[in-house]
Length: 246
Image 1: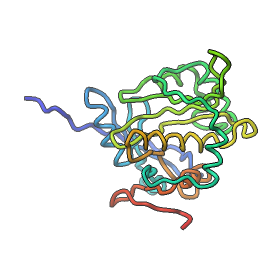
Image 2 (image 1 turned 180 degrees about the horizontal axis):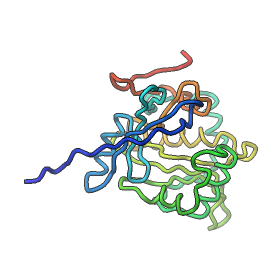
Image 3 (image 1 turned 45 degrees about the vertical axis):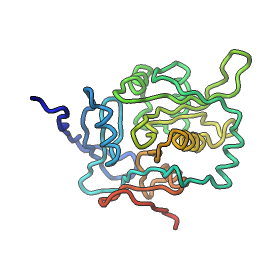
Image 4 (image 1 turned 60 degrees about the vertical axis):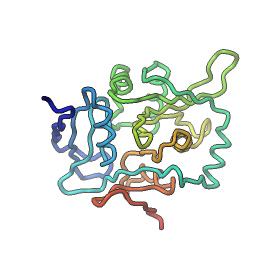
């Protein structure tokens, strides 16, 4: 008689330069998400700080640093501040669609513009169309691409100005990767708007959390995540609310 669920095998990557803190190295522990219980495994690992990339779940496992901290928004208690309410009103004209995880040339073109403007020379800078298709389409869990478009004309869809690859987990929405119009003169604050939209979607679906991935104290590119209060971080004793500005 075989067991219905086999404990996964975990592996550790070789040390590599840290993308967040100069002069440091990173190492990850990871496991494969496969088989009929991939979604359940992903849910369980997500609650202890793992993230998904295609068919792999991973988390930092650095020997001399614990700067990367998993964070999630507490949906039920979230109240948008004045700046966030203004942002929601400004972008209220957008058409938002939940799409199956299928890559398109339009998405990839927007991603390339976003990476060139916001993350030049980053780890995804050399991504080609096939790499992007793998990122979107290779998923063993409940995944969607949420698209944000300007109003169209007639039956023609409007211009794509944002997208987010999103997993639905048993206790929340996990924002795997978002990208958007980088020209703030055209669509300011799109990254924050996408998070606000996910909070609304989680609330409507009765899901308690929106998972934002990792937060790194001292990394300027990560500070936007703590603007969405209340937010929790994962500590050795479990998830705890925090405000770095308090």
